[in-house]
Amino acid sequence: MWLYNNKFIKESKSWSDANGIRHPKNWATVWSDESKIAAGLVEVADPEKPSGVFYDFSRNEDGTYASTARDLNLLKSQYTASTKQTAHQLLANSDWQIIAELERARTIDSDIVTYRAAVLTTCEIIEEKINVCNNLEEFKLLFDRPTDADGNVTGDSPIHDWPNGS
Image 1 (cartoon, rainbow, N blue to C red):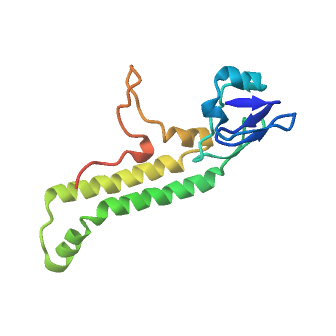
Image 2: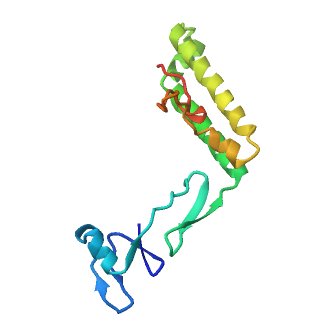
């Protein structure tokens, strides 16, 4: 990212220097780094953007971010509702079989019974993992995907670890 007089200069946006010279919005792509430095720009590392899942944030004039943690109870409530909605969606394709069993004593395929039980159990497990979080750091761990010793992702995050199937 580039700063001018300690202020963040957005790429793809024109800007004016201290002499009142207006620079074009394509400055970042057509100017060489040497031209940018000659114009008084200073390149600095772009700070990591806070996660919009866990934080409300805005960008400061100097390019850094100001962030405020979202309310944990609100996050827990939202993700509990989202978990129930995911379970509902996963079960919806086989709901007709449950109705057919109740209304017409029709036999449900055992794979469907097993899958539905796994979805319902997973929903309860995820809800419990959400409920036991006492702080934002614990809640954020629910989104971490497991990795092997080489850093390769080996599965879904705990909050998204649903069974595969029907």
